[in-house]
Image (cartoon, rainbow, N blue to C red; front, side, top):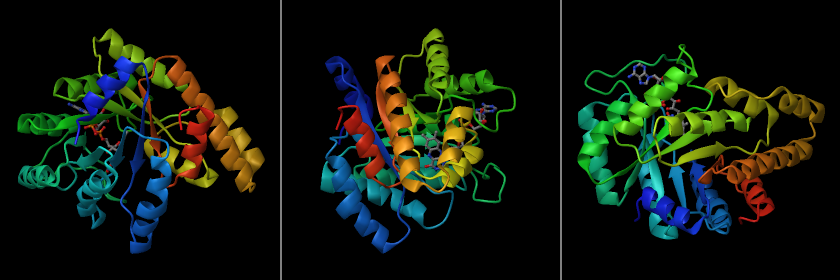
Length: 294
Ligand code: FAD
C-alpha cells in the first residue's frame, strides 16, 4: 500500500487536490455491516485518495483501528492512515503495536498525543511518551512508516500561551519526521490561512490538510466545538439557531457552508480536503458533488 506523502506528490504534479475521509471504529456489529456495505461503498464513488481511522481514548475499539485499516486497504484498495495515541501506552506497547501494524500492511500512521478518557485529565503514562513529537520521533526511527500529525488552526485548547506557541510545537513535530499535517475542524478559513502562512514563513513545506466537517446536527456540533476549542462564528450559530428543529434545513445549511469553505480553501491553494465523515456518506458526497469533485 502506498505512502500518503507519495499520493500527495503525485496529485500536486497533476495540479489536483487530494480527497480523504476520516472514519471511527464502529461500536456494534450492525455498525460494521452498515459501514462496509453502505457508507464506504457509497463514498468510494467519490474516488477518494485515502482514508484514516481514529484511535479510541481507551477500551475495546482501540484494537479495532488497525484491523479496520487493514480491511479497508484489503477489500477496497484504499490507502488508509491508522491514528495512534500515547494515551495509556508504554513504549514497549507502542513497539508491539507498530510491529503488528507492519504485519497487517499498515504503512501510514497519524501520530497523536491523544485525549484522555472522558472525565480524566491528561497525564503521561509511566514508560510512555509525553508529547506527539516523542511518538513521531519513535515511529520515524522504525523507518517504514509515513507519518502525519495533527495541527490546530486556532491553537490547541490546552495551550494557554496562545496559538503561535502551539504552532511552534507543531513545527517541532514536523521536524521530528512528519510528512503531512491534518488540521482540527474549523469554520473560519482565515484560521487555516494564518497557520498555512506561519508554516510557510518558517520554511515548512509539507501538505497542510484542512479538516472539514459538514454540520448536520446543531447540538452535536456545539458539543464537538466546545470539546476541541474550534470556534463557531456568530453568523454560523445565528443561522443554526434560526433553523432550530428544521433538521433538513440544518443539513442543507451544513452542506452549503462546507461547500463554500472548501471552494475557497482550494482556490487559495489548500493541497486537498480531509472530511470528518462521522461514518456517514450523504453530506460529504453532496459537498464533493457541489465542488465537481465527486
Ligand atoms: P501534542 O502535539 O503533543 O500537543 C498536546 C499539547 O501539548 C498542546 O497543547 C501543545 O501545545 C502542547 N505541547 C506540545 N509539545 C510540547 C512541548 N514540547 N512542551 C510543552 N508543550 C507542548 N484523539 C484521539 O484520542 N484519537 C484520535 O484518533 C484522534 N484523531 C485526531 C485527528 C486529528 C486530525 C486531530 C486534529 C485531532 C485528533 N485527536 C485524536 C485529538 C488529539 O489527540 C488531541 O487534540 C490531543 O489533545 C492533542 O494531540 P496532539 O497530537 O496534537 O498533541
